[in-house]
Length: 255
Image (cartoon, rainbow, N blue to C red; front, side, top):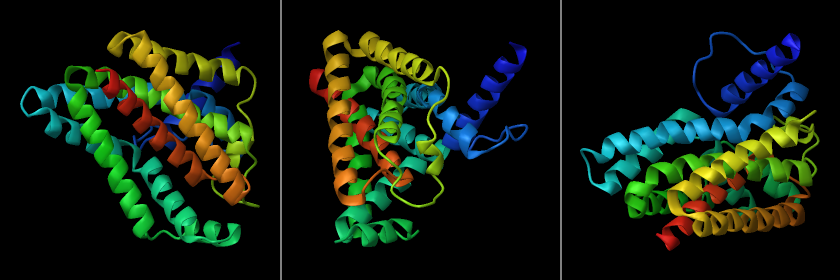
């Protein structure tokens, strides 16, 4: 039992190491299989990330107007995560926008440079998130916690539903599976995020936000299957960003 708990603790640290730029006191021991199992903790780590950003928003709102507090919270998220998912969204937009064939799209997505499709898409998504948070006002802090936790389920759903589109790559671990008790742990994190949204915006708003995130995930998954033949790390990052944005916008619609 002690060994099992120690391993779960290392998996949590792997998830933190992957999703953030926080310095860890020791290396938790990366392997593709263990990283795949660590994905079960993505929603819980997302909750923690959202909590940090909620604190930034709440403290900033004491001094600045809501739009400035929202900008600072979004900027803090980009810094904390190293723009991991934002980079995936931009690469995905460039690949699907500029690649006429599957092979060309995947080639574009490997390019570290950002193109016009990626720049426009990323700018619009960041602007929508800032505008939604500013519009939510006092509810923005709770929305950040819930949206960051719940949107990480989108990446897990797509990694389980779609094969990996490349023969090899950095995100090949996403096809490994969550391991024993993986989905119950992941869904518990998602349920906790949904409860936060219910407490923040009400049951109806939270459920419709969940539905919006599901619809966005289904749409993106269908597009990745049709255009790429499966999922990639960039696609999973795009799913998180679009899911988070859909949740925030739906909450704003009910505010």
